[in-house]
Image (cartoon, rainbow, N blue to C red; front, side, top):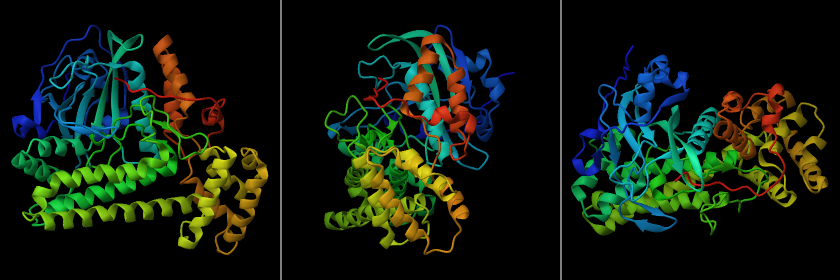
Length: 489
């Protein structure tokens, strides 16, 4: 049959200082355990070919498909606020790019494919558990409607990976609009390589800001575009209760996609101080800190672009400051719009925002579940018992008092309760990757080689806004308990 991937590579044509070429590495016994057929069709790739022995070799990194040019990308980054001047793809290979059926250029990257020049004494490998987590959560984010990298395939390697214990190894095939990060700009800026910095910026503009190609103010417009995309993205994270867990500058893309699902998780009980990551001991990347960290990361990008914005330092600073000022306005607008839609006021005004924020305060005080509370509001409008929602609060009367004000506000608009409830169901998911359920399906696959629960959960998460009565157990967060996530490295 043969593997036919319509590669159309461009990043590999950039100067050698942007990447390192890496030869494929054999693995013991590659086995395909998952292929995303719908995504393969988007990319013009035969999913059936990927499921063959030849496909397993290509997807594990053991062989290169015709037209593939495996490279590891170099970048720098602030990790928990500390600058590291040289990072790079320590366990990943960009095997090439394809232009999909919609004309979008997409990267194909193997994650966990072995040592590269940027591995920094690491083994370059990935364990099956983190690979399953990234596949599951990234595809769930896509179904929720959030910009994200996607997952094309999972291959087990037949080899062990050693972390705290011996674990089965695996490789994830990740699909992204690009892998250009804030940290990519930081790498060249820190080295004073202005021409490489300019080449990177022009490449990023051509790929992600095409309306600015060749424009005299193209670097300012690039910064503005990244600021707006990140503002929209992080607002949407907040609205679904997503906690990225490791918002280092090397984990923020200029494309505006969510990337690097390491110690990520979703809120159960609402609390802005929530931290799941075992490595975030100071709470730098807590749920409620994400908007401010997004702006901090963008300031680091702006610093890199100063030499390109203007030959005059004062003018460059003025342009950078102006571009960054767009972030807060864009975030606040997107978050407010989304939050009001979640309580049935998509046409609401700034006067309505205190009502929505009051609900959040009561949820925090009452230990109420973030996703279940919002989803339950539409059921109330459909004639359901309000006690189904209020019982999730330590003091049910606190919700009942809010609900009276909420119903009074809704009564001033002309929409029928049924119409309003339907609109709310389109923005308030019934199903998210509940933390305990994610762990459950990972344990089955890793411990028993049983991928049935993983497939079942993935199927439910593909339709997050639908009531799926047969799948109610997947919406249950499980017993309240401390929950921690771990970086796959």
